[in-house]
Image 1 (cartoon, rainbow, N blue to C red):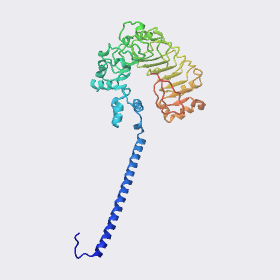
Image 2 (cartoon, rainbow, N blue to C red):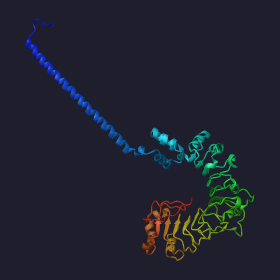
Image 3 (cartoon, helix red, strand yellow):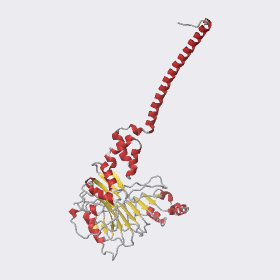
Image 4 (cartoon, rainbow, N blue to C red):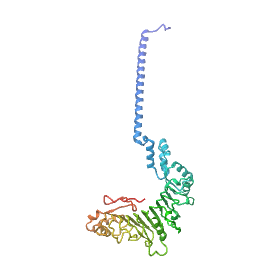
Length: 419
C-alpha cells in the first residue's frame, strides 16, 4: 500500500486514537439514540393506551354491545325524527346501529313540511314493528294507506282524517286522536277499529250523524274525550259504552235552543274518571249515574257549584272556581282549586263535617303569593291544624296527574294518570 514519504508516525498515531475515540463516542450516541427511541416508542404506546382508556371513560356507551346500544337509542329517541337522526352524527358505529334498529323508528311524528317520500323512508326503517304515529301532514297520513302500514298501527294521532283513509281498516289500533274535524263518531265501528279502546276527538264538529248503529258494531271504548253540542245525540252515543267506559272527558260546546227538560239520563257503572270542560253558561244537560266515580274535574265553567251531581264516592276533586257549597263527600281525600275567592272556604272545608276524610287541599292562585297571605291565614283560628292540609302550588296539571312545583308543605298527594 502506498504511503507518503514524509509521514509523521506520531501524528498518525494520535489521529488514529482520536478517530477511534470519536467513533466510540458516535457509537455510544447511536446506542443512546436507539434506547431513547425505544423509550419514546414505549411512552407513545402507553399514551395511546391511556387515551383509549380515557376515551372509554368519557364515552362508555361506545363499548356497549349492539343489542344494548340499540335499546338505549330506543329509550333516548325524540318524538321528532330529525332529532333522532342526530344520534347517527356521533360516529360511524352509532349510525350503523341506529339504522339497523327498527324499534327505534316505531314512534314517529310527521311535520306539516314532511313529504310522502320522507314518510316512506321513515316507515321503511321501522320494518314490520308496531307503530305509534303522530301526523300533522296530510301527505304523510295518506302514505299510511299507500304503504300498507295501517295494520301495524296501535297508536295514531292525526291533525284531520283525510277522505283517502275514511274506509281504511285499522285492525291493531287501540288509541285514536283526531285534533280537527270533521269526523262522525258513528264512523268508529268495529269493522274499521275492532280493538279500539281510547278515542280523543275534542272538536266541535264530530257528532254529526243521526243514524243508529247496533251496539255490537261499536268498539268497547274505555277512554273517551269528545266535544258535545247535541245532548240527546251525545247521550245516545254514550249509552253504547255503559259496560266498558272507565274515563270520560266532555268538552261542553255552546248549546243552541232550549235545554232538555228532563235531562237525558244514562248510567256508567264502571266510570272512574270524569272531566267536564265548559265554554258555555248553559246548565249541564246530562244526568249521568256514576256510582264508581273516584276522580272528578270541572274546568272553565264559570259556575261556583258542581255540574255533575253523582259524586258520592269521589276521592279527588278539581274545580276551576271556589265552590259556594259542596255536597257531602265522605270519601274525598284531595281537593284541587284553580282559583280561590275566599280563604274562609278552606276553613269551612277543614272544620266542616261534609269532608271528614279530607287529607289535602291544593290551591293554585296568585292571590296567595302576595303579602296579604299571612294576614288572610291568620284570620283562621288554629292555622297549625289547617297547614297540615293546605298547599299552595304555582303550577299543576289537570286532573288526574299532579306535579307540584312550589308548595308550602313538603309532601303532596300523588294521583294516577288517565291515558
